Every structure is written in C-alpha cells, then in structure tokens.
Length: 123
Image (cartoon, rainbow, N blue to C red; front, side, top):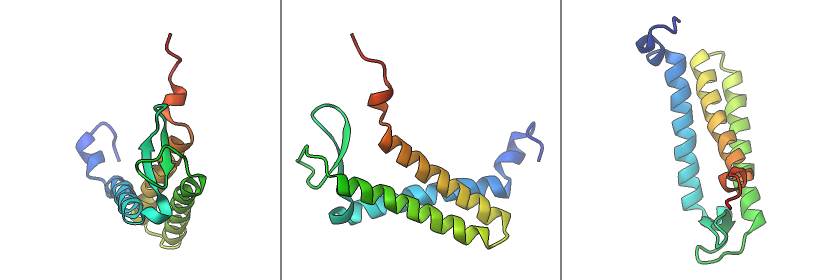
C-alpha cells in the first residue's frame, strides 16, 4: 500500500475493517450502557465539574461498582473480540478487532484520567 495515494489508503480493506471495528465498539457500548442502567449506572457531571458514574442521574454520589462494571465489560469485550479474531487468520478480522480494542482502551483511559485532571490549574 502506497501512503502517497490517500484514496488507496482509505479504500484498503484492513483500514475499513479497523474503522468498522471502532464504530461497532462505540455502538455496542452506547447500547449496553443505556439499556442496562442497573448494571452500568449513569455517567453524569458532578458539582465539581468532573465526570462520575452514579446509580441515579440526579445524584452526585459516585458508585465505584458501576464504574468497575463499565471498565470490566470493556476489557472483557476486547479480550473476546481479540481471541476470536486471532484464530480466524483473516487480516480484515484482525484489523476490525484492533479497531474495536483501541476504542475500548481509549474509553477506559478517558475514564481513568479525565480531561479535567490533565488541564493546568486556572489562576
């Protein structure tokens, strides 16, 4: 694949499979987290401006178990997809699994290190 030809890069099967895997992960996560609120809770902004996971959308009390449930399901889904793709021998399946895993791990890192913590303190 010649990277000097962008159209060739964007129509490559491995690239499209990776993008597809990333989109599938985001959609599955959104559906799971909104349909199974008793398990995953509500992700809300607290009074302090940080994002927390709570049992009730009107509550500012963080629920650590709901937070752990979210991260555990992301890791489990990524491990399952990687395991299934590794046995297929199909490069497109491997690319889709990598796309899936990258988005899941990015979401885990966003939850563990919120942007509010990374911004410099205001004077």
